[in-house]
Every structure is written in C-alpha cells, then in structure tokens.
Length: 103
Figure (cartoon, rainbow, N blue to C red):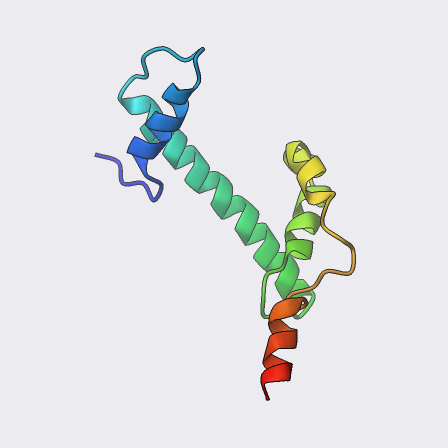
C-alpha cells in the first residue's frame, strides 16, 4: 500500500466529475496523489531556497513567482504567477497593519 498525503477518494471524485472521464482504475488516483505530492515538494522547496537566498524567514508569493519564472518546467504556471505584484513581500498586507493598530 502506498501512503500519500493527498486524499485519494477526493481526487477520484474530482476526476469522475468530468463527463469525459469514464471509470477510473483504483491505482490512478493514488498515482495522481503521489504526483501532486512530488509537484508540491519541488515547487515549495524551490521557493524556500529563493527565500533563503534573499535572507527571508518566510516564503512569499514573490518567491514562488521567482521559481516559476526561473525554470521553463514551470511555464504552465506563468499566467497564474503573473498576477503576483513585484512589490509583494512576506509579511506585507493587512495582517501586519492590524497588529500595529492593535498596540
């Protein structure tokens, strides 16, 4: 039995929600779950490395954007990360402002 970190039953349900998908073999959602796990590990590890290079203790959307733009294997995510502003940083945004106002 293969242990995965993503819910296999939910993946199967999502796959079968598509009208073009017929029956799904039992091993297929397990393989998709494992592939998703490896994909996330690669993407987040790359972003963590970018954060370390910049001396940041937090991984931000900007770090993910740098990973995607730095390697053509992530080209399919280009449109999504294109929406991330250049000035966005870890810790920026409303959360930090609320803390300051509360003091």
